[in-house]
Image (cartoon, rainbow, N blue to C red; front, top):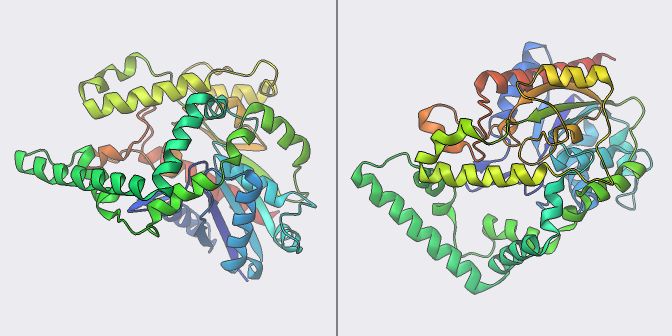
Length: 374
């Protein structure tokens, strides 16, 4: 029978893409912490729809559980990062009907815990950007790239050119650059075959973008009215917040690549500060607000966020921990030494490191163990 733990990725998420892994080092860190507590578990990293509706993403998770022997397990635990946390909440909701059979109940009866990590339980203003004219144009471009021969050829040619440049600059002593990392992990592996995982990923985005409207504060207002907790399941959360992108990042501007990435993070951060005046985040009780504030070196307010999700929108159930981190740090997408410095896709100045990563996933393991002991 045993225990199975499912890791569910978030918006724009994937299991693996080229040599990139969404939950980078998470399975290993979590397994180590569980084993130290005498818990043997099969950890499964799910594949999902990158921008699909929460309902369709939940159904994909359901099918993944079915195909990986989840119905034979005694205990099931779900860990959802970002939108993945909403997928899991919907899947576990009592009486939900994602398919015509009763598989949801069979799964729900085995679930012991639902752990959400940096999840927009009350929406994120960033989703409103993708409903704007500029956001829709960006998604239309991605659609054309995935579904037309000319689009695929243009991307493939650009990928080959950039890979060549990455090799050439090695002769000039410029090794281990961002371009080298991107080339090794993604660009060199792109082919013109329309079944290539990159094109499949982009086609998924083209086919279903339902989560975009659902992740707005307005959409989550309706979601929370319909999606309820399952009795007997332990609901917990991991909360993240990054410092505002100002003076502490000026040194990064000396690097062209870092300047671009810092600029992107700054834009995302500012967009995410805009709380909807008609759909405000719930005010946490004083004790919980104090607990979150005590873990941060900057003020907690409605503008505080991790670059994608407002911090106050992430509170749901009992907090496992509060971390100064950007949205991707917590799933292992951070720099681990100089040789790995280009793995940080969101340079936020949060200084999230190995110790934080280990502590975070050790806390998740502790929560899983506690739910099994209930």
